[in-house]
Amino acid sequence: MLTPLTILVLAWTIGSVVEQLGTGEYVATYATMVLTPETLPIVVLLIGSFMAFTMGDSWAVMAVLTPIAVPLAWELTASHTMVAVVVGATFSGAIFGDHSSPVAPTTVLAATFTGADLIDHVRTQVYYALTVVAVSTVLLLTWGYGSPIWGRSIWAAVALLLVGSVLLTGIVYFLSGWDARRKNISATVTNHETHSVEAGDD
Image (cartoon, rainbow, N blue to C red; front, side, top):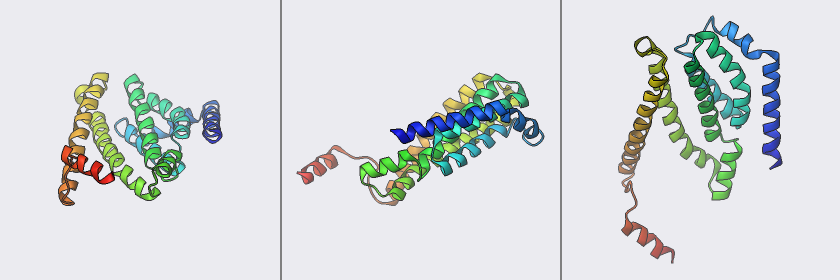
C-alpha cells in the first residue's frame, strides 16, 4: 500500500510544480505554432499512451499531462468542449498505457495472482486496448475535421461517443468469432461444455 501512495504523492507534487511553473501556458504558446485544433486530441492521446506505457502509472501521467494539455486546448480554441475532449484524451491515453504496460503494478499483480505469465497476460490485454485506441483515433479525427460541418458542440461529441460504443461492441464480437473460427473452437461456451468441464474437474 505504501508504494501506490508514494507514487500518487509524487505525481501530485510533479503536477503542482508543473502548474506553479506555468509549464502548460509555456507549452501552449509554442505548440499553437505547430498543432491545430483538429489534431490536438490525437496528439494528447498518443503522448499520454506512450508516457503511461513506459512509466506504468496512469495517475502520474494524468497529474503531469493535464496541466499542460488543458491550457493548450483553451489557447487553441477557447472552447469548453475542446477542453473536455482533451481531458478525455488525456485520461484515455493514461489508462491505455497503464492497462497494457508490462511494468504497471496492476498488470504485474493481475498476472501474479492468476498464475499467468506476465508477457502472455500483456498480450491478452493489448489487443483489446489497441482496438479501443484505434476506434478512438478515428472518432477524434472525425470530430476534429468534421467541426466545420457540425461545429465543436458537446452533442457532436456525445453522438460520436455512442457511435464508438456500438462500433467497439461489434468489432469485439466480430474478432472473437473470427479468432474462434481460425482456431476451430466455439466462440461461446454452451451449457453442455460447462457441465463437461465441471464433471471433468470432479
